[in-house]
Length: 389
Image (cartoon, rainbow, N blue to C red; front, side, top):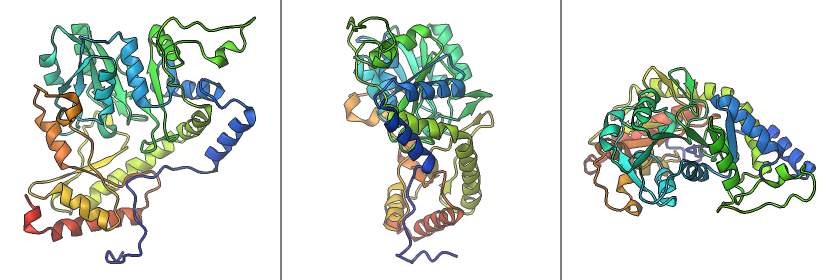
């Protein structure tokens, strides 16, 4: 049994990417090829991989998921004066993307169990200014896409899937990324597969894909696409664009990681099941509950710290003992950048205050898991009465 008082034990991080020599080899190939910039052959291969993963007709590799959300909204003609309904429990990049367009995010509360947007509250939030809905695969748990798609169709709204944490997830037999008009994935270092920073947008709408691809490259056709053109192919700049391309160096790493996704998902699912077993005997915390109609990615393993135990005090104590941890994510309506919010989001607020993310990554060992849970149990038992409020 691990001695929890042993201060020489190495820390257990909240997350750690799983890489080996195959990622290094892929980078070496790109360096040898001479094409390091974005929208090159490795980016094309990554796009083809995400088309297959999501079942979509089109994919565009981008420098991050936030850029993808921004370009998706622009391609869906969102602008000043519009409102977009946004799942409140998410990293603020989701809300920021709406602000980038000049539109207004209207935050909608989430389900108590999944942390995903509450479909029963969505329709009540629709106004004459509402242009669409952004659902979030919260912490890797897919949202309720069947009723959301039906609602969006009936009200003439777009549905955008923020699948930042969703690569490999499944809802009602369909893969994350395959819902709504557009979906966007993240390849950030904390995600299930990563290249450090990156994102991929997927859609079945050819016009949206074209607008996104051009807008990600200053509003023009990429150099890689132009190099085979006859004559001197000079681009024209008819519309404002951005520099949101993903480097082919990073795309090569992401391609290798995508090839490992099934293996990574299987390992994380086993770790999640084992966590649930270990936590069953720990008072003061509740393991995550996932409905039977969906398979999460377990990008984050967030327990709920039950009242009156202080989540913040537990987190601080865990970090002091070398156990990485964090909040789940944010109740965006509370953030000052969005201004005063009329809507009430009590469930999102509760999750923001009560969720505690424990170490979860593909190479987490059983010994590390045992130590995490034992330390958590000890920390909760040792809390002074003043911290139980």
